[in-house]
Picture (cartoon, rainbow, N blue to C red):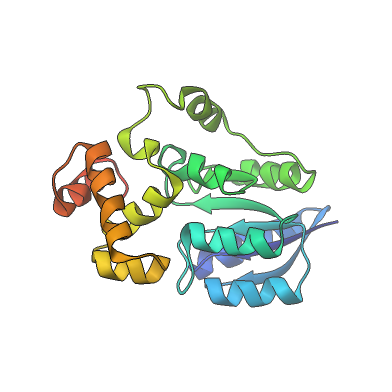
Length: 207
């Protein structure tokens, strides 16, 4: 029996997906979580085989949440289930330890298939993710897809409107280091200001 935990801050998504998982003869939903801090506590109390994870959770989110989970439970298969298309963030998250990435516009049958795949110890690679891996390092990738993992962390906070000092405090780095990351992000995106980074993100469908 595949033991599954679903973490999503939208109750309809969380309960609906959990119910569908429970209908599968080889799966059982063991718990749900609505925010990152709650999820860490639940994982400590409820062993599971697969975590279906929306990274946009309150209190602890994104790469930091995935890193915290993989540090404490390295064998846990994490299937990221996100509103963002695979083009935007999937490569970063697979590099950070995710076993698979699916956008929420996929059919439920594909989500169930992905759960079975990662539970068996195999990465779940969609056709689009396979294309992105093949294109990595080529001109086919969008500028934001060439950011390093740390640059991506800073980038997501800039487009959320955070200041350099707030970013530095949250990531536990110096303000000068955070500023250097912002400068490199601007260079890679071909923009000159934080405002233009936000405009880039809007045009790329990241906001």
